[in-house]
Image 1 (cartoon, rainbow, N blue to C red):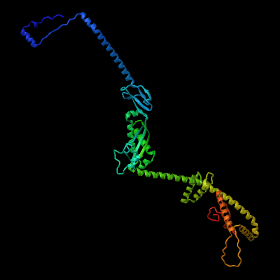
Image 2 (cartoon, rainbow, N blue to C red; image 1 turned 45 degrees about the vertical axis):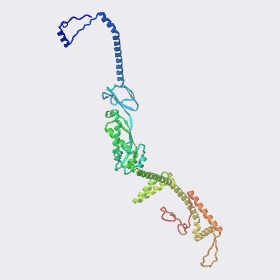
Image 3 (cartoon, helix red, strand yellow; image 1 turned 30 degrees about the horizontal axis):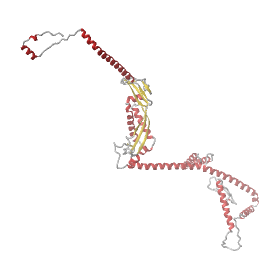
Image 4 (tube, rainbow, N blue to C red; image 1 turned 180 degrees about the vertical axis):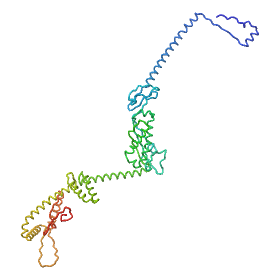
Length: 476
């Protein structure tokens, strides 16, 4: 290092020096080094420079790798896994991609542009939405059941809007409902264009509530509570019409009224009415079954045709159409004689046919007997009659239950008290019992015997006359 040359200030006077002290001092230093010194300094700095360069190169490579990783991650972020039961569509800068009619995506891994270039919008194909509180009363405690709330209900504590949900019916009454709706997305493109996927359930719920209010206003309280399927079908139709008007692409599969009841304060009375109606239905069904059993027992399983003919006959009689009624009566008779008619009618017809056959055979025997006696009658009618009379008396007197008493002639008008023999009385009782057993046996066999009675035996005129109308003659 060499000293610097003197400046004019070094030769200044003391007064000038004092002035310089007051005004400030200045100095200039010059550093000089030789080429050897500079080389030594560079050699000393080379390791540090190399370390710094290596660190910079490593940092650059790491930055490159990180940027590549970010680029790859960004590109693969567009890949979406679509599970089963889910549908959706893809958009590029908000525009739907895909051919018309084929915009929806299929389940599986779907490669696509990442956000914000591209976006994959998805929603479930089928969902169930429940409406529990909108039309349902507040029951009190959380674990309170509907029956407990009904028992504790007070008519002086009315339903409060804002706290208790309800719906107004056509007759001005109130009803409480809980519902569930199952819907499916049939047009995902239209649905996602109109609705945020997160708001689909909310939209369906609000449309359901509006439909419930409209449909409930068309039904009375009893109809709304008792009709099983019609209110739900009407609600579904209203919902579908509204969703179609919104072009939502949503199809309502079913609507279910999970719970429905009258206001709790009147539910007890309504329950008693319902029990009475159920009892009425049970009694009515029992009466129908009994009527059907009686009709089947009367005319067999095919009693419907017979009843129709009888109803036709009665209507014709009521209208005064006698000829038509007579023709229908003939049809009824023919229908009763068909082989598919059973029950009591068939048994009566069988007994009638048996009686007719027995009557025909009896009358035939009597006719042959009369023909055999005709010649004797023409020769001496009174003698024949006297002979037949004596034979009848002899036959009657020869029976064991007949007892003969003899009285002397000429006693005049006297009252004679006669006591029958015990043996004869016992014989009479046995004969009467035998006749009753015989009659019962014939009834069990659906057969009735025919025998000419004393009133039907006439000597000087026809003794028996059967008339089809049954309003005259001894056969009525």
